[in-house]
Length: 236
Length: 264
Image (cartoon, rainbow over all chains, first blue to last red; front, side, top):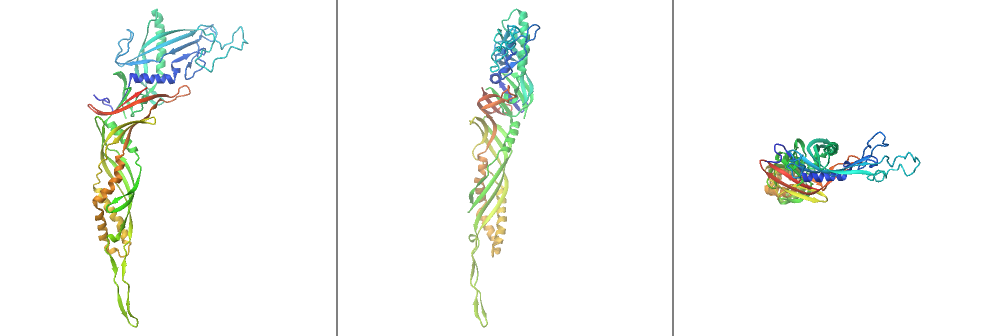
């Protein structure tokens, strides 16, 4: 059976190549893995994405938080990486994704960059660490964190990017390991499903990257996930 | 391998059609033997596509691709080699009161003339190409490289070029005093001296290098490959390293040109 089948052009990226590409992507743009409110992230840079604090009545400035995601690892069908029973076995046309997510919240009532109502003239307050966006801004954030291992099932989807046709991974399901009680696990799963889905949706891999610039390809079929790789078919 | 890219034979035909049309052939100048003469020449050429046949494991045959060529050359002819010695005889007359008066015997020295010729034609070539993979200066290249020196069949070109030489020589000879009566003899002698062998022996060394060094690009990428371009201050370009490139022709139910690429 030919690679191109009934088409003119075939391009495939093996799961190892996809891992390499994602490693390079997140290495160059770690802001897609690191998110936080101003208490943790002074501003959006290449390293981190600043987002608003969680607003809550009675909490001045809101609740600071940060989410750090380890670089996701992918395994394309057929399955070669272990999965939790809930996701096992990996179905056809699917990839599994494994990562670790760390979530922190600031366990303080006031951020360092906000004036102390009792000491409004204190000059040590209100100076965020602009020179190091990864360094927590507040001195007294007292972050409370937990890490959880996350497994997800996703499919590949064709999309567009500024440079033309692209692929992205769309998360279909997620499973956490060793988190109890079950209700808490469900809440965190729901939260992380949305986060991981959003993170991966923003990673658009141009088709030209998936074939290392070889041969022109106007897509006619795919992406197909099979033989441990993601395949595209097209015409010249 | 991390990345596999393949094209079938019709797509390879399209790819190589485009690539061969973009190949620029540097013009050639020099001198060569045109039968008994030495001709200095300027030659240029351009390629047109042919039909691609992929042959496993590593041969790309291109049938009937066309080399259009243009040749300007000039060569010197010592006419005394081709024309008989010609002298006006001494003539004497008796003139009354003057006596006998004679003209001198005048012999014509046939000059050496330069004959410029311009000629354009094409030749169709079928050649086998191998696949060359190189990494030099931080750039990976996969090229189809012609194997050996293709045999150029000039066919009717030789007769046409002889006719062009005849057309170029005729007005030059007509301009030479006393050469008119010998025109046909001279032209014929020159063409016989050159002959078919002289034409092919002249064209072959000039035009063969246009084809024998031919390299047709198939794939060219920087080793430090820009996978995703920059999209703003906080979205810098994403580069991957192309560590290895392999290429082969595979034959299953279809012949395909396959590139296998390792990245990191």
